[in-house]
Amino acid sequence: MSEAILNIKSLNVRFGGIQAVNDISMEVRKGKIVTLIGANGAGKSTILRSVSGIVKPEHGEILFEGENILGLSPDAIVAKGITLVPEGRRVFPNLTTLENLKMGAYLRKDNDDEELNYVYRLFPRLEERHWQLAGTLSGGEQQMLAVGRALMSRPKLIMMDEPSLGLAPLVVRDIFSIIRTINENGITVLLIEQNANMALKTCDYGYVIETGNIIMQGDGQQLLSDERVKEAYLGKSKAK
Amino acid sequence: MNIMSYLIRGLATGGQFALVAIGYTMVYGILKLINFAHGELFMVSGILMIYIVADLPTLPIWLAIALMVVLTVFIGFLIEKFAYSPLRSAPRMSVMISAIGVSYLLQNLVSYVTGGLSKQFPDIPVIGESVRFLGVKDKLTVFLSPVIALVLMVILVLIINHTKFGMSMRAVSKDFETSQLMGIKINRVISITFAIGAFLAATGSILYFAKNTGINHLSGANPGLKAFIAAVVGGIGSVPGAVVGALIIGVVESLAKAFGLADFSDVISFALLIIILVVKPTGIFGEKTTEKV
Image (cartoon, rainbow over all chains, first blue to last red):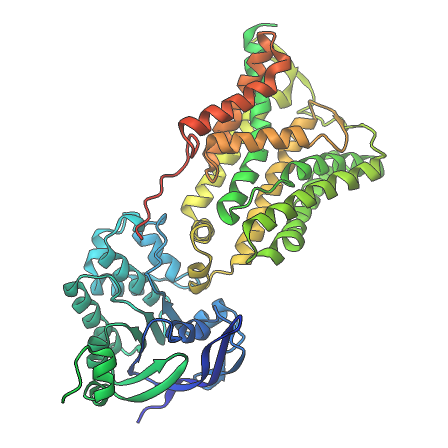
C-alpha cells in the first residue's frame, strides 16, 4: 500500500449561505488514479479549487506530502507540485499553442525542453500546431493543450476537472488513454468526471459525492458494480 | 506658418499624448478599467518636476528628471495598491468610480499645494533648445516626441510579445484564475503594468511640459481626455493602436488650427471618436474575438 500524497481532512467550504463542501475527508494515494463522481453542483470542482488555493475553505486541512497547504497562495501550491487542469479547458486564446505550454512552465527557472518534448510525444498534434493561436484550436486540441500545459510544471499530482466535457466519443477515449499513460509515468491523478463509466473503469479508487458529502467510496470496480451507483450515475435501471 | 509646421507640431502633441494613451490602453487591457486618474498622474509628474527643481536647486537636471520619474512610478503603484487592488473582485463600475475619485483627489491635492496658481515648468536642457528642422523652427522636444513615442512603443511591443513577462501579461489580460493556476502572481503583473504606464506618462509629461510650460492642477485633464480618445480610436487594449490613435488625434487637431478652426479642435476630436466607434466599434487596431466557447 503506497502512502497518501494528498490528504484532505474535514474540509468545509461555504459560498455565501451555501455549504458547498460539507466536512469532506478523503485521500489520494501516491501513484494512483482517484476519481470523484457526482452530479452537477455536488461540490467536486470546489474541492479541487480548494486544493489549488483558488477557493478559500472555511476550515479543514489539506495535507500534501504531509504538509498543510491550506491558505497558501496558488503559485506556492503550483510550486509544490500540484497542478489543475481547469474545467472548460481555459487555454489562453490569445497565446499560441507553444506560448500556452510555456505558461505552464512559468515557475520553472531551468530549461523546459525536456517537458516540452514529453508533451509533444504525448500529443504530436500540439507540435504540429505550435504556432497557432490556442483560441483557433478544436475542442479536443484545446483539451490536449490544457493537459499538456499542466504537465509542463512537472507536477507530482495532476488534478483534472471534467476533461471529457463536450468532446466527441473518440476524443474522450484518447483523453482517458492519455490519463493512464501520464499515470504510468509516475504522476498521481485526481480526476473529476461526469462520464462516470469511463472514470470508474480508469481509476484505482473512487469517491461518490452528493450535495457536498461523500456518500460512497471504494475501488473503481467495486463502485462500477454497485447498484446505487449504477442507478444514479451509469444510467442503468435497477435489476428487478 | 506653413502646413509643415502644423504637421510637425501635430505629430509632437500626438507623440506626447501617445505616451499617456499607452498607459490607458495597457491598464484597460489587463483590468478592463478606464483609469481616469491617469491624466492626473501626468499632471502630477509635471508638478513634481517643478517642486524637485525648486527645492533641490543643486541637483543636476538629469538626476531631477530621474527622481521625478521614480516618484511618478511610485505614485502609480500606490494608486493601484490602495484604490484598485482592494476592489479586485468588485464590479467594474466600482473600480471606475474609485478611479474618478483618485482623479479628483490628485487634482485637489495639487490645487491645495500650488494654491491653484499656474507654475512654470523648469527649462530642460537639450530638448528645450530651439532648433530648425525641415524649415520649421521649434524646441527640440517637438521634433523628438513622436520619435520617442514610437521607439518606446516598439520596445514595449517587443516586451509584450517576446518575453516571459509579456506572455504573462497577455495571459492575465484574458483569464485571472487560470493565470494563477500557472503560478503567475497576478497582483505583481498588474503592479508592473501600472508602473510601466506611469513611467510612460512621466516621459510624456517632460516632453509635453517642456513645450507647454505653464502647469496648474487642471493641466492633466485635457491631455488625459485626448489620450483616452486616442486609445479608444486606436482600439483600446492595443499598444500600437494607442500610438497611432494619438498621432491621428494630434495631427487632426493641429491641421484644424492650420485651417483656422482652432476653436473647433475639440469638436473635431470627439467627432472623430464617434465616427470610429460607429464604423469600427473596436477601434483601428481592436482585436477580433476568436475565442472558442
